[in-house]
Image (cartoon, rainbow, N blue to C red; front, side, top):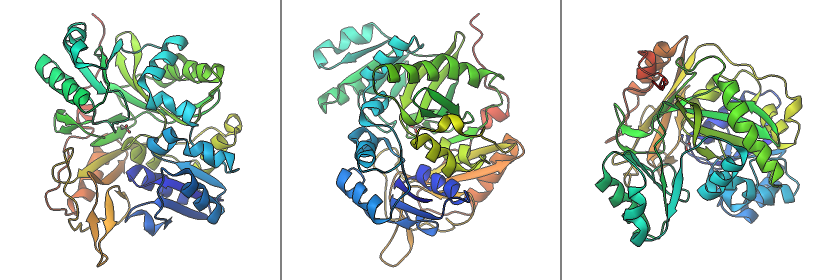
Length: 421
Ligand code: GLY
């Protein structure tokens, strides 16, 4: 099977590594890829938001399967164009990708499906902002109502900070979504979805704030771990039954069946799981940890989803133990990251590239905010954390930073679901 992966981040590098381990995968291509993906796939410098360019590349490499990693091409309808040209494609249609691309659509689907989520209100004018803020908080949750790669979110008990963020978004022409705060630890549950068939992967937890102890601004994600020792047995089944299946069924009912990866971001509250957000693709950096424990052939799972045969896929098998991803970020991330710095030691197992490129003289240089995602595995969370940080210690990037506490609270038993008393 010849597979073309669309995207350039750590998630796509992880997908390629997973695909390269599938005996049925004979050839790997990626567009545009990065300095790390070139070691296991052919990189193609193509504009991945252009339908024509992606379809032409899929034809050129005679792809048997195209896997779309990021949300932007999905929301733009690149999967529709590929399917229209006859390619088996992993990733939802533009209509179904609105579950991530339009928060109003997602809320409407969740309401119709009876799924627990935050109360919300869209504010599109500064004149309405103060009255709307008074109907929420504390704590305030202020989001960019469009795609913002996780960085458009501010969660704060400080009304002035919430107001400043909302006003800044409005000034730059971005409608604001205010939400009620959902209490409880967060879970990222990735599910392969083909119409009403839902196959969950193992649950993970992201670390969205930039600094140790969950301080500082939100990022695209600074690290993740899987599985979640604090999550009760049966919770994944509960999330699938109460959240993912009803949403998948509602999308089918509306004539926009989902095909691809549906990512439920949840808060585990006293009343059960509540949806923080849905994404229409694998999450980053959780994917890097989750796929490192997958024993079943990834290509076959993605192909079954893409071709409407997910219900026939054998049960997915997972390695015992745990996996931890630690992101190495460029100086100034999540602000405007510094690029062009030489990275050394960024080779070897478990070192996944995200924002990297080759300089003219062939050196590996930083080219994005999240530069590398380093994955450690082990018999338990402590061993996986030790493995990840040991790998990270041999990598050098001037000005870079990372969190030193990925998975630490879980390892120390400090995460629990509120009891409601
Ligand atoms: N892990 C956050 C995201 O992928 O959006």
